[in-house]
Length: 495
Image (cartoon, rainbow, N blue to C red; front, side, top):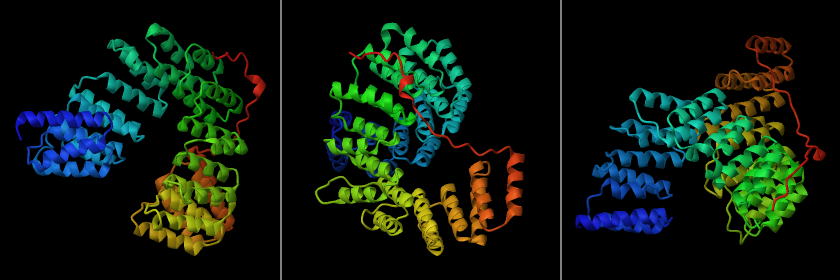
C-alpha cells in the first residue's frame, strides 16, 4: 500500500473514532492489516481509543509483534487504554517501559492514579516530574487539583492555586477544577470569589460545578441565584439533585424537581435516576417508585437504584419482585454486578436466606459474571445471621480457590458470622487477618470486642478497650440528618 494511502487511512480511522463509530474504525484497521502494510503509531494510537478492552489488548499484542509499540505516543495511548478499563497495573507497567517520557505521558500517569482514587500516588508522580524538570501544563494542574480534592487537602490545593497564579495560567481552563476543589473542602467563599473574578469568561460547565458545590454545602440562596441568571440545563439540575441526595435534603430536592419538570428535563434518564435516588434516601419510597414507573427509558442504573431503595427500607420482597421483573422476558436490560449486590443487600436486610443463595448462584451460572469480594461479604453476612457457619467457611474456601482476594469487609463479615455462631477459634483467625489489613480502624476493634463479649471472654474485651485508648481510636458516633423545611429562605425564582 502506498505511503500516501496509509496516511489517508490513518486519518480515516482517527475520524471514525472521534465520531464514535467504532465499527467503521476497526473495519478500516483490519483492511490495513490484511494488506500487509507497515503499522505505525498513527495507525495504532486511534484504534486504542475504541471502547473495547479485548480489542485494545489484541492491538497491544500486535504492536509488540510488529515493533510498533516503541514510540512514546503509542505507549501513552496504551497507558490511557489500560487505565480506562480499570487495569491500573497495566498502565503503570507500560509507563515504566517508556524510554522518553514527555509531559503527556506524565499527565496520563497522573490522571490514571486520580481516576482510580489513588491521590497519594498521583502526588508522588508530581514529585518525580519536578525532579525530571518536566514542564507543568494546565492538564497537570487540573489533575493535581483533583488529587487534592480526593484527599480533602486544603493547604496543598491552595499551593496549586498559587502556582496557577504565579505561572500565569489561564483561569478559564482551570477555573472549574479550582471551584470543584474549594467547594469539596467546604470553602465556598473562595469558590465564589474565583467565579466572580472571571467576569464574562464563565461557561455552563463552571456554573454547573458551582451550583452543585453550593447545594452540597447547603448554600441554597447562592445556588438558586446562579441558576436564576442562566437557563438551567440538564447537567446543572442533575448535579444539584445529586447534592440534595447526598444531604438527604427533600425540600430543596422537590424545588429542583419542579425546575426539571418546568424545563422539560424529565426525559433524561440520568437525571431521573438521581431524582429517584434522592427520594429514596429521603425516605420517600412511594415517590421513588412512582417516578420509576413513569420513566420512559430505564437503564440498568434505574432498576438497580429502585431495587436498592427497597432493600435499604426493609422491603426485601418488593426488591426481589422487581428483580424478577427486570429478568423477565422482553426486558433487554441485563443486571450487572452492582444490581446483584443490591439484591443480596436486600436479602440481608430482610433475612431471606434462600433467595440470597439463589441470587448469588445466578451471578455465575446464568450471567457468567465473577462475583467480587463485596458479593462474598454480603452473602457471608446472610449465612452467618442464619446460623449457617459451615456454609460460610465453604463459601470462603471457594472464594480463595477462585483467586478472589479477601478484603477487610470479607474478614469483618466472617468475624461477625463467628460471633453469631460462637465459633471461637476460626473467629480469632478472621480477627487476626482483619486487623492486619486495617489495624487503625476503630470499628474493627468494636466488632472484635463484640465477638469476645458474645463468647464470654471479658478479659479480652477489656484488653481491646485498653489498646483503643493507647492508640487514640474512638468509634465514630452514629448520626442522622434532619432537614427543617422552614429554614430555607429567600430562594430565588428561576425564570
